View 1 (cartoon, rainbow, N blue to C red):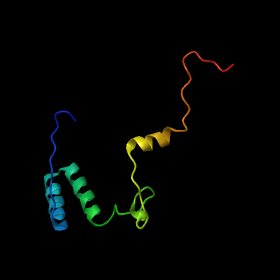
View 2: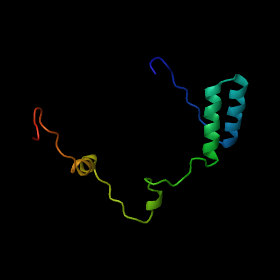
View 3: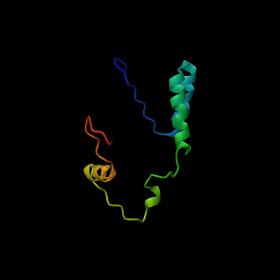
View 4: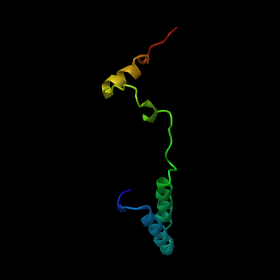
Length: 90
């Protein structure tokens, strides 16, 4: 957002997250409360999951990275070219 500032908080221990939550509640700072809850949930493993598309399950398999250009060419290789303006198929 234009004109807004960012505030960074560094948490060294989960206990400091509890302190952060208590402070945010005392101040009535709802966005800060929500952020503290999210951070606490993260330390408790809430967002640890193996979803399709991650490399977590690929351990032991050989993965060969490709460049963006190679990936783009593969993805768009089977996409038909657009019809020229004024072209009809009758």
